[in-house]
Length: 183
Ligand SMILES: Cc1cc2nc3c(=O)[nH]c(=O)nc-3n(C[C@H](O)[C@H](O)[C@H](O)COP(=O)(O)O)c2cc1C
Image 1 (cartoon, rainbow, N blue to C red):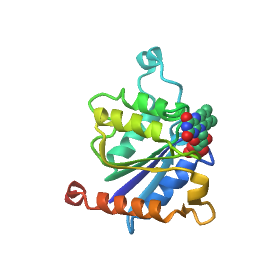
Image 2: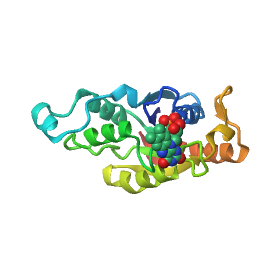
Image 3: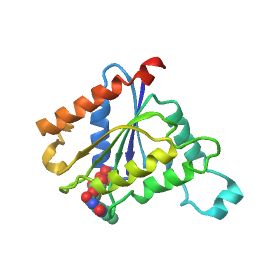
Image 4: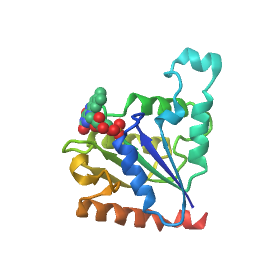
């Protein structure tokens, strides 16, 4: 089983990358790949760019990684209540690839964390509403509020017992999704 962990951020110190990397580590003996938006940096979407040059190879590479995954863990950073520009650009370009849906029905846990009380709930709600229109197969969602209090940066794991238990239950659940086992 291949786990693709995606941080919807281009920050080199991304807290969402730290969270999604920890979440991926909860799968035992599985192939894990962690990516963030720096891996797919490309010009901002523009209609004329698409007409002249087509979809950039970075978006095609992102799509290929999704297609090769059995589980997606996606943790989105929140900028002004919604997606970061870096993530939205990758999402927009990938949605222009013909004859495939962005998330290709791969079972996913949709996550977000932020330093504040809402833990990125704004971006999580936006994605929860939108992703199913792009082949998003959302099995569960998870937010980690007050990242600095609830995540042990040295140990790189969630320090809040209740939130850690919640995440582990959700990882356990997606591991058992029948469609994955059938693959
Ligand atoms: C332009 C900008 C807008 C932000 N807007 C929000 C916001 O709406 N809600 C929030 O909880 N945090 C907001 N933050 C704080 C981010 O949650 C914080 O920078 C976090 O580290 C981003 O996640 P990342 O480190 O994974 O990129 C904002 C930060 C920036 C730079």
